[in-house]
Image (cartoon, rainbow, N blue to C red):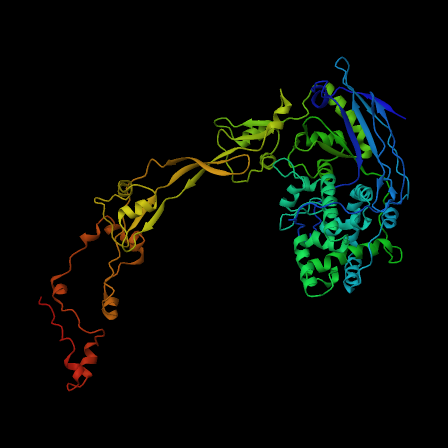
Length: 638
């Protein structure tokens, strides 16, 4: 049975030229985002280094069925082709849950959206039964499996949260696993990787259900930019993960345990461990390899979850009821739309909508970045009716548009005009609370009147100008340094350095404290890719010559220690140009106060240690050393 919806979609469909209009697949997929707040214990990142190898041989699928075909405007949906395994067996993919939407390219009439009848899958009524029927991995003979079973069973609340989240994604994952002829134990792997949380992020920046690190995600075409992070997209990340698993399965001689170890540890690391054992004449199976503890416990966790699901009744565990049917559908749209508006159309809260569409980073969904919106299957009709009604009202679908700050304009004024908080505006543009954008900054912000909604599609990211204050910098003159060597070191001329410090002559002495950079105001540009550069520097206009600190008058190194200790050394505040040295700060080093007449008349000591007068009196006169001591000092006449 079919039904038609006559719809006018100004922002989404009718603006496209008739020649561009085509069929839009409405694929029913399973999944939902994990509840925010549950943390996962993601495993080691599945980084890969080697080339892509051939996929492993397919495993026969037990469930069978035929796909529905529907035509709309001459378009038809073809039935899926059967797959053939290397052994010659023919496998038929499980029945698809696909709705096909075709937009008829008739410029004289409003677009007609034809929704083909969805075919319910056949087979077990419970998704758990379907998963159990597809278990095909051998047992793992290690006590670690029992340890992990106890770990999970002692945490029933944790299991319940995982299974509740997984219920929304699990149908799609199981469906894709079976299509590839892979064992359904692999559908449980996201429980181990991320606790089935698509927003999970590890310390190594691995993200999503399948915990892809950035480099591996890029290798498997999972876009990561300002707009989206498709490592969090359940559909795209599942396809990438299964591709990778098939690659490393074939790489390790069709051994799923070694493939799983490679997913956790890296296939090159596993290959080295295998070669090491082989060269020593040891077995090369999973349990015989030397590996990190995390990898050693990785596969036992998966097998433990398999046993729990397989024997839930005997263990006294009640699994959540999961029907063997899709949870959500995916709409492929053709234009941008505000995320909040899409949630409103579906009758969902923003948090619920974001939980089901975690790949989108911004408050507006750009069609050129990720042209998909996932909705609960039972919300599709309400969504389409709301889209039609909104289109007839001539209101914009995408109110968030690029905006360039004018002179005197601030984030506060923009937020107030748009009816949102400054915090929301900052979050939408990834601006920190301390960022104070200047005029010329380009961001996205809501606008009440929008002439061209597609402008936001060309927005690559914020381009932020901000002012940064730099305090002055100082340098203490060291031995052998000159004014010109210091100037060269800091990239200024000698005359400039002399003027900044109010020096009458280009001479410096050891211990002087010179200003080598005055305070300034700099304009920092952060471009669309996050690169930072200084585009302008303005030195403060009120920079005046400073009073140079007096040098440190330190005696020569050869002077005896006892005399050096008595030599007049300026206080610490004087060396640093502090308050106590203000009176002498402007006096050049050579202009030190001359010594008194009595002081200049004192003879220089000839020994390293001079005893006190009392000690000299106590020494016997016949002692040879006493005769060599310095004569008694004569008191100056008054």
